[in-house]
Length: 592
Image (cartoon, rainbow, N blue to C red; front, top):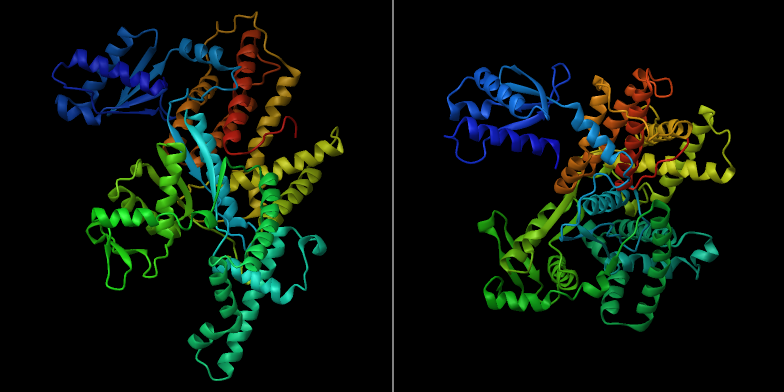
């Protein structure tokens, strides 16, 4: 049990004894005591004063005295400042915490809670390679899945691949027109980049044809509809849906090139999935559900045969769920897949990691699922995140102006190599170790920078800033871990010494207070679906530990007892840094 929960329980018990007129648990907050005041944790009394008809100072004195007298093995002192009761926790509590957990790499992780969660992320299109926006999505999805695992959940990582539709046909038509039979192998190009290049070629050709038609007297709207290359793409989509053999074979071939490219990127960034769904297999799902919904009165049919749902009473509008020709729309496919996922895995919650431009879509999805009374419809959760932009503005795939994921990863590794060499700290490393180190630092910098920001906020990515070893960055944390491991290679814990005899100094206790919070941070990050809570906590821990080392040397501590205490703090700190960064998908080096 977290110490804040213990304090809450003890205070509630004390209040019940002191003030029998209180019915049920009292209303109060517990915060960490501010540095300028004496104490470890603070009970905020303002929520109690009205019910008890007491002044805050009087209530604080009565409660503080009672807590210290009745729980002297836990509370050793108190002070009251206006409506705040500051409590000092006994050193024995912190010593026991350290002794029990300092050498436990699994510290903070919750026991299995029997609940199952699916996290869907990545969702790439097979007409282009992964880009910077995909990286934020993938890192968020992978990280929240790992945090949920540490929070006691059974997690299934899933991906839906958008492998059909007009955008795929555009790349296919461009390849037929311009490739002369070229393949990724012949071109020496990664498969997803190869296909993405043809998507850009399609749009270049389309623009040229539109301009030519406008010059010939067509309106822009007419030209956009009549451009020959667009008509070819539209016909190819019809042929694909009809199962035309040559179209299906080309589709399989080009998608295969893309999947090989995706697999290489996923491996390089440490991403993985337990199950992958393909839109080509799921786009017909939901048709049966539409018919069932019509029978239940959830949907209604218009005169042209199209099927709709009226969500105006829910603050939205009318939503099409099936076209007049009987074909599904995206929302219907998602409803069908949501039901299939539940039938396959029976999860309590289904988390969709999708950008905030789809907020409306997921409101509609959840509402329809609830109205249809699909199992666990209330567990549909949209982990909405803001777009990543560059200092120069937004990215556009069709114009070829995106920041390619592979190029960005390579650039980050290159910057890590350059910075490390400039620092002159590469002595004693083999070439293989250096290559691994540059990869660890570069990829860690990229992941941390994208995860340190609350998912709901938009952000601008700055590669140079992300890798600054002195900033709010992954490399700063990696350096702190390496520094800690260096200390522990020179010194080791000695179990035979009774290190608990001396009182804790303020910075020693402060380190233990922060380390004690790790399980609560895991719980918070899991509950809020917010990896930035973990990133901020680990950064704060590292800053604090570096300050601690500046004031309190370990190897030349003032006593053997203090040396042993601080070694244990160092061991526990290293474990927590490693575990916390691991949940963000970031490796921490042993030396750096």
